[in-house]
Image 1 (spheres, helix red, strand yellow):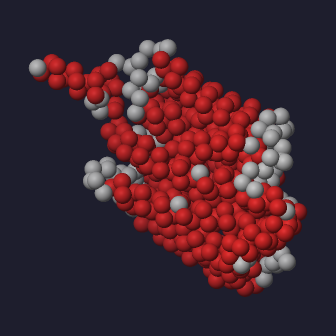
Image 2 (image 1 turned 30 degrees about the vertical axis):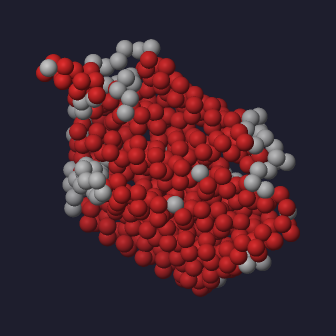
Image 3 (image 1 turned 90 degrees about the vertical axis):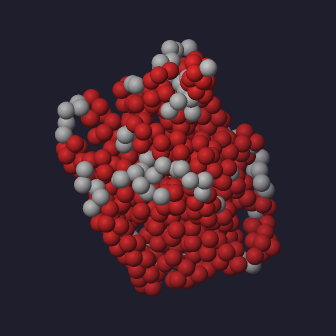
Length: 521
């Protein structure tokens, strides 16, 4: 039986949200003392340690995608959704640490870059590449941020029964409070706190939900009784066009591995967590970065997918009839029936922590893209104090655009919408930003070609998937591999930057060291 809102659930949700809001506001106020200038507001003091950074990355990586979207997928399609909703996530997050962490932190500190598009401008010596990156980033982040708001709104609806308008307004209000106050440092510390809460909530809910349906054997028996296809790891009876290809063919399933690899490293809101991190000089820094990622974004994610299956075993397909929330109600409803008010309160707090933490990072990037990477780039005489005020003011419209999108045209399953936006961001920014710090031969022509291709491939592919003309897995392959090919070919056919300039930006490479040694000999 589908649970109904009650005063007890409402009180628990309000209490959890109040604690979250108070802690985040306090962190924002503390950080405000260290955000007096525009540079400090954007990247703090560049002294945040690896453990806090790891907690923040885990929070942004999971977000509404993992805390509700993944459960919605396995609830809707059964075990075949595990590939998209859990199995490949760890294969994605680890490259983020080894490919991006040290390179982004060092480059940002060495060249005083404040945003990811700023890195593009400096790395390729191109205002055009930077502007295109900022515009593509903002557009795709708007699409991805819709998922965050829907996750928060879905949860609030589950425990209170309020209208979508009030559920979504509450989410926007909470984010703006600590983001406007604390800037980058406040956001980073708030995300770290939110990530810890998120990991605990998802882990506990997964264990309790599985026990509620009778453990592994009980889960299997209930799913088999409803529909044996829910137990299959691949659903070949489902269409191989549209989003269902992700669950019905090897092309779709393999594309999710590529997606998680590209998106975790290419996510702007993930990569931006490294910009204010202190330089990684100790051997133990990587360890302290990886530990919270594994604890928060590792094991709990696998249990998230089980939670969706337990919800399907409990409620059957009934949640798919509740518009506009549908299968994304799987996790909050199973929390309400399996753990009562205590578990629901913990889960409410965890989901708001994840979704709003990621949402705050996204609108921070969108606002700073406009001020730092467009206004300051093309009109450099604008005062830094003016840019600081503009950045804070732009946070409001940056939050309201996804608010109205979510309110009037919400996605049926948020994880699928977010998957399409993730493919675009991974396809574009994994090569242009992360690989550009490793491959010294990369040029602005390759970067511009990659951005243009990835952006339009995402738009066209999303339309074709929405009209069931092609499979989503096929589109993911075309977006990510096509963007990479454009980046490599464009760089190889164009003139590279002078070696001395590359050395100044990235530090001396192996060729420079070899040349120096030869000269010395």
